[in-house]
Image (cartoon, rainbow, N blue to C red; front, side):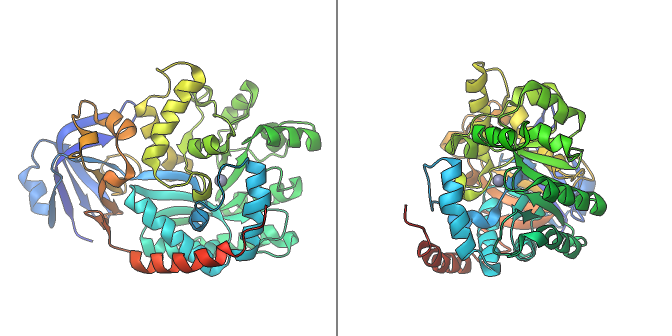
Length: 440
Ligand SMILES: [Zn+2]
């Protein structure tokens, strides 16, 4: 990894409010941001650089953070669309997963997802799935940063046939992956309706004992709220709170159907919430109350959710849709602006995942950076680079990506993975998956 100097760049630091430098430079050294500034790089900066890149007025910003996905489900992309969540999960996804998900499936599916994420400017992601040790292999090969959380449900899964051992199984992965920086382990309980109280409490206790993040889908659909009410006489957030699961290391995914008191509970317990707009839209689950979460100071990240319910991992589209859906929800075009969603998709998501030196253009922060082209028609003119990133840019506009100072995407070509091999293997696995789609 060489000291790299980028000059002639529009620098966008996604703080709140964001800082924009119209013509600037940035030096990476030892995997971190060494320094950055306005105008031409000074001679002492030039002297330290081993590689120089002319950004040609492209926008340089921190790599995006996909705070919630199920990467290997990239192999289920387009398998079943236009269905309600319950039908989609119970009649298609769960049965096909039971028959096709294997160590090999997770490895190749995660490679496919990493290729897509790097190609579209995501450098870190939060994941929840099965066979996470194989996802770990794929993420290391790709050179990405991630929190990989072992999936837990109270029924047999491809990676844990005996559900009574599900939490032990997850703990084994946490132990295996604890020294694998920049990848960190965690535990992902699928939902309050697929994990009973005992499983939830045991999983959270294990997370506390090991100092790792606890993730759970929560309050995603109206159906879930009614189901939890009928089983436990209360709503999903209150149910998790009564079980003692909510604290600053707990990440609630979705949080769509919550009342104002539940939002205050989430804030008081210092939990984070990951919003997955496109997946919520596609499954008609609803629109999360982002304005209320922000008012209460709840830390927010942005996620695509799995590629089977989105159907891509492009956070640029996710930012755009999130800002627009919130305006529609509130009947107010001034809420959840471009700066807010860019913050959620970068430093906000980084903090939700527990990375506190990532997501800003600050000296000492990880040199996880992306360079976005601005010489395409939809990127011109360039009045406001922040709104351009959110409302005009697409993942395919990302030209260069560095993770920890390593140049992993160079002029649109990935340097860490073999796209041809991934495509060949994906085609083979597609045939296998197709033969297991249940008749409906
Ligand atoms: Zn999910």
